[in-house]
View 1 (tube, rainbow, N blue to C red):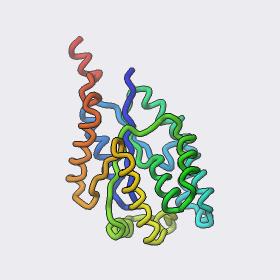
View 2 (cartoon, rainbow, N blue to C red):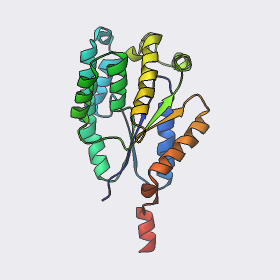
View 3 (spheres, helix red, strand yellow):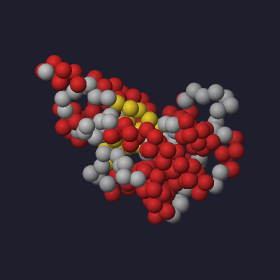
View 4 (cartoon, rainbow, N blue to C red):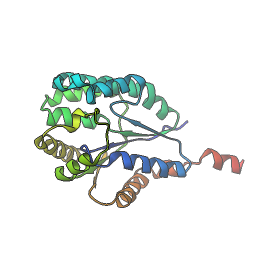
Length: 227
């Protein structure tokens, strides 16, 4: 069985990743491909517990940056081995809302942890499973902040990662742009200010170009109709 494809979405809080993840999954499923959506942190029972601790637990506001890094890597390690790797081996297209690039940027750039240590931890947690294509939705800090303020959450649910000062998010945005400059073969930066339909169309053009062979691969239904 041919290996599936691994696509990740990245960007600052409020960039519109989750919307575009769902839209791309729908498009791919319409071609007959099997698609799995997952997210970081989370995606497994263990990962979802870690997600709650990282983002919503009251005690998380006292968390040290080093602790934060280790928790993100723990969630990723479980996700790769329990979900992502088996799915790819079965020929499934895996779409992840965040992966190790988030750690490179948020912990290595915005939190100012030593980049070499962050890279080593990413390598250890992800192993050989690397994204084939990464989409970064690029939005300015003011737009991202306005979108975050419009989100509807329970009054008791405060996302720690959305409470950082503007300077933090400015480092995040520039961190992603620098990452894209370093890895142009894997990373595509897409203007996230435009309408969701325009963004979806550009993402589809990128995906179609990168995975033309996969999209042309005979599906089960095609094989059955020709046998």
